Amino acid sequence: MTMLAAPAPAVEGPPPEPGPRPTHRRRPRAGWWHLLLVPVALLFAVPFVQMFLTSLTPESEINRFPPRLLPSSLTLDGYAKLFRDSDILLWTGNTILVSAVAVISHLALCSLAGYGFARLKFPGRNAGFLMIVATIMIPTQLLMVPTYVMFARVGIIDTLAAAMVPWLASVFGIFLMRQFFLSLPAELEEAAVLDGCSRFGTFWRIILPLARPALATLAIFTLLSSWNDLVWPLIAINDPGSFTLQLGITNFQGARRTDWSLLMASNVVATLPLILFFVFAQKQFIATMTFTGVKG
Image 1 (tube, rainbow, N blue to C red):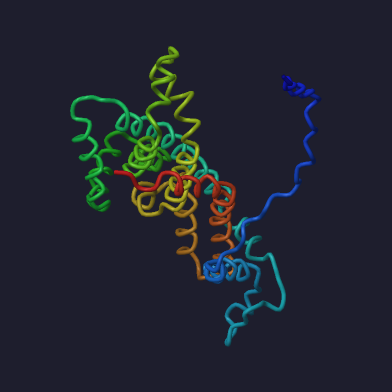
Image 2: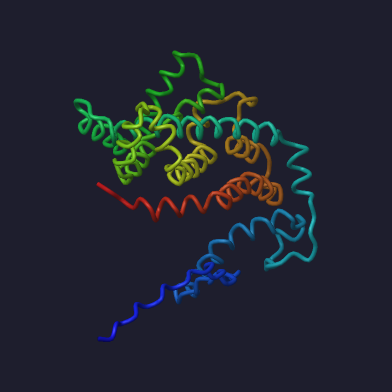
């Protein structure tokens, strides 16, 4: 009887060395919609480019007819007159202070309120949130007179505080943060609580780092609104030392004849910080729009 020999055991050698990894990533292809988006983007950029070129155009060529698309020479006379004849630096500093307070308070208060309405269970939560959202339907013009009377009694009229207080929080900020927090899985917070983390510790260490896209979006909208606010400072501030940028430019323009190079230079100074801020924060802004959507 013949015996079948058992197969010899395989000799395990060292694992093969991994081959070289590709050093380049595959770039996404441009879709057909880019053929439409590029001209639209250029169309929206035309007003700012024209404003910038007008600020560098000599006064003699601005009023020329027919107007020229490109100036024959460039000059900084508009910027020189702006910084020499106006308090543009003071106005810019006041606006930066008001916008910084608005952005910081929005990020703090709206995120806390949005998290409370999204995660905490208390009597009247849904009714309270609906009442807050319903205040969006109240026209802003109806609130100006009672707000002015209230600020006058407190004694903050003609101060920067009058421009700061209305921007401490907003219904839109609370709504945006609540919708973002509702899109996060509750299991993250449950795991943190099981590990011994408090409610505020969970919010600070787990939720807020995940909410950076929503916070960046809220910061962009708050900065745009507070930086460009004109109507309320025009009513509440009469002291030239407390003028914001938009209020100062409006009063400066009305106090003299229309100097287009100077006016365009002031608009460039007022617009350029917003463009730079959006360029640096657009990645977080797009991430919020694609991650949250609209969730009821």
